[in-house]
Image 1 (tube, rainbow, N blue to C red):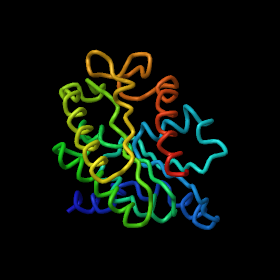
Image 2 (cartoon, rainbow, N blue to C red):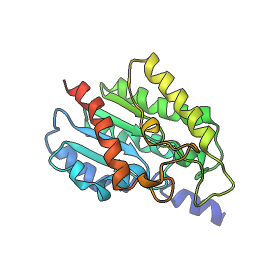
Image 3 (cartoon, helix red, strand yellow):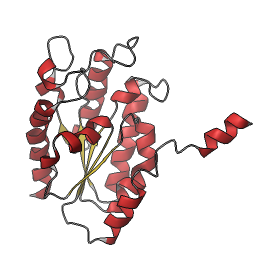
Length: 214
């Protein structure tokens, strides 16, 4: 009974994380080109490592470190749809492969991202689906070898994007090394980009954002 009570008391999807910021943002007039970034630590870290990318732009960062796609799907309405953006940027899936919230198949991960994309489209929000960054190991879970799973997930996301005429942003090809991992100069731990990594990602993404704005 104690375990059951504790599990019900947990904020599994971290719904409280952005509640105050969301309330304040919803009171303000929505920018016609507001862009919400939905993701995990790679999205969250973007704001701290490269704050100048977000400065004086209608960009809203809703990344939460460690999150998997089912957690993002739970908080998608409050952290994306309710903010009335013109565009959402979806960058997710690597923590699912790492089994942060338990085992899942590549199809399950892709389906969660597709569900977020379809929720966005149903609310007249433009969708940008990003490739998962290359990774061939997890510092916190050495038993899992992610390289091939990353490639398969990206193939599914790219196929879905093209079939549904959505923007697909390919970070993977620009950042992968010969071992199907992240280039060393782009991220010290093989998972998270450093400043150089974000500098590679930013123009690739902004090209897609500008297409929607134009």
